[in-house]
Length: 131
Image (cartoon, rainbow, N blue to C red; front, side, top):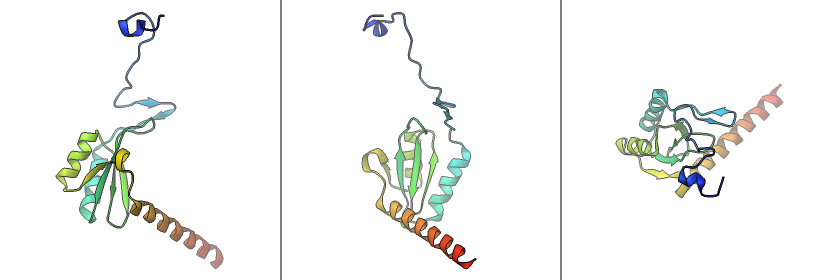
């Protein structure tokens, strides 16, 4: 096959788009978002204050996800149908939304994870020493 035959519709392998609902990537099946994901996101937004949304693009391992981070760094992440859906969800709930690929993830989320890990280690150490 010549170099440009692919573009002229020549013979040879055709590139196919991955199936949107059950895309296979390697040995992993990517689960599509569902109503349970939306309900979880809605509950998180209504139960916490200072929530911001970070829309994460599709990767080889997962579909588009919406990362919600509260004022104290507590966070949740769920799959969503599309980038547009995620921004509309945030707008509907008066939550500022950002593209995570552009702005990154907030430091308060990393701080929250560090505090949580330190507390879990201290608890394990306390339980081991108590026995």
